[in-house]
Length: 406
Ligand SMILES: Cc1cc2nc3c(=O)[nH]c(=O)nc-3n(C[C@H](O)[C@H](O)[C@H](O)COP(=O)(O)OP(=O)(O)OC[C@H]3O[C@@H](n4cnc5c(N)ncnc54)[C@H](O)[C@@H]3O)c2cc1C
Figure 1: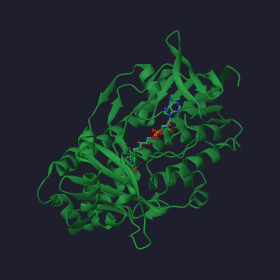
Figure 2: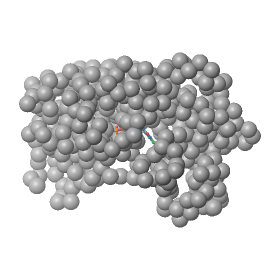
Figure 3: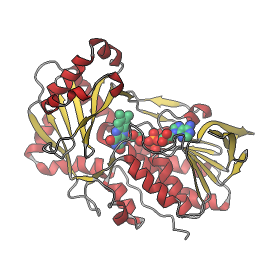
């Protein structure tokens, strides 16, 4: 490996935002390097939901049929069991798109798919096991990224660096941009339990007094997310594994026959939830998108969708300037202006649900009843199309406007 790599655009982070952006830029003929610190995309936690709006983008790109060959299952609606009542919260079936459903598929399949598509273009370079460690700034402009891989340290130089390195973004910390912390009352415990042949297929949320469990069907196992009040993991650990197991079984008795699969605390991973947003998503030579610009709550499972939408908007706006070799800050500020409102509205809705539903459920000790508005959803099913639209398509969905160069 030489000590310096030159490119037109360096993307730091191979998550949904980074991989989609790198693929779209390469497809339009832009020379792009994307670095991902892990050796593969097979990591413990990844959001698994591919939304109707992302499936529509796949259709616009002519990739839908190929994409849907990957193993997935379809969610035509999303619901929850609250206390003893089951409610449907969002219905996607009437969305005016090719696929009016969420495709639940392991995110590593989605990212591998984007990587394979990117590799069809000669200007796409994916560097796995490569971590961006610092920004190179010259005369007040970001001119590159310092990186390391198993062979050693090197620099990537480019007229534009796009930080897509997620909610613990190193690039954001190095850039010193001001962050507004919007708060989250919960964290999530992440673990697996086997899926039995006679289990239901659907992924579902279970709400009980003081407890929330989300179960995601991943074929031969359930990926489980148990929601706890923020910062309470240590206290739960002190109460012991048996207490945790019995809480899970209490809210989903079906798991009684397999809860012993959680043999120790190593099988339970703490995922810290944070919701925040940069005041400014750019500085000369640097743009931040996805969770690096605005960490999303897991509420509604929309973070992957938002990251993809950021990538599409960025590719639409950046392609011509990158091909010409000049990307000034006014171009970068157009991207923030385009995406800030959809992100702010979505975060506001997530925070409302966090505070009015999740925070209250976690604090409830007695009987739990669905909030009145959800009762209305059962009475007037048409109302379910509203959250279906918000979750499925997001606010102001993006469309691909970049041409394919080859
Ligand atoms: C508990 C929890 C559950 C969630 N569930 C869902 C869900 O079901 N559906 C959904 O849509 N959203 C969900 N989200 C939100 C979603 O995970 C994020 O919004 C989404 O992943 C953001 O995508 P991204 O590409 O911006 O960042 P990320 O997905 O975080 O990707 C960042 C990438 O950058 C890499 N990276 C990090 N630092 C560096 C570095 N220095 N150098 C190189 N590479 C680096 C990382 O390895 C990673 O691959 C959830 C969030 C949480 C906290």
